[in-house]
Image (tube, rainbow, N blue to C red; front, side):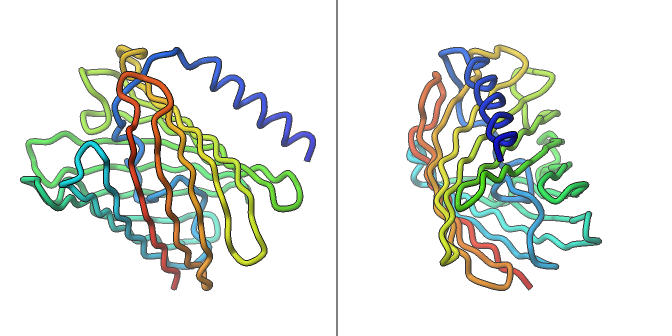
Length: 240
C-alpha cells in the first residue's frame, strides 16, 4: 500500500509539473477507443457499451458511440464499435473502431485501437494505451491511464502524435457505488502549449450486477486555451 502511494504521487507530480499553463480544445484521442471510459478489461465474457455525450459548446449535437467487447481468453479482449453523431451534423456515422486489449497482470492492461472513417475522404487513426489500477487498502483506489495517438484522425496540423494522461482517484462503497475524480491532460507533439488541455472529470459509477454498470461523468476545463467548458458523458455497460 505504501509503495503504491509513493508511485502514484510521483507519477501525478511529474504529470502536473510537465504541464505548461496554457491549453487545447477537446482532443479526439480521448475517445479513440472502443472502451468508452479508460479502464482495464471488462468483467463479463461479453459486454455491450453505449454512451450519450453532449458538449456545452455544441448542444445541438449528441454523440452516441456504441461498442461490443468479447474476451478471447483470460488475458485478451477484442472490441469493435461505431461512433455516431446526431443532430445538426452531415455525417451521422463518423468512425468504426477496432481494438485489442492485453492483460499481462491483474491490475495492468495494454491496448491498441484502429479508427476507420466511414467517409473515405477522412483519415484513419491509431492509438496505443496503458492502464493501471492502484489499491491503497479499504475503499480507496486510483487509476492511471495514458494514451498516444497517430494519423490524421487523432492529430492536427501534421503533428507526429497526440497524447493524454489521466489520473482517477476512486472511493468505493459496499453497495456497488463508486465516486471518482479524474484529472486529465492532453496535447500533441506540434505546438504543445497551444494544444494543451487540463480538465477535471468528476464521475459516479453504479454496479448493476452480472458485469454491468452505469457510469456518468462531467468534464470541466481547468486550464488551457482550448480546455473543456462542460462535457457530459453517460455510459451503460451491459455484461453477458
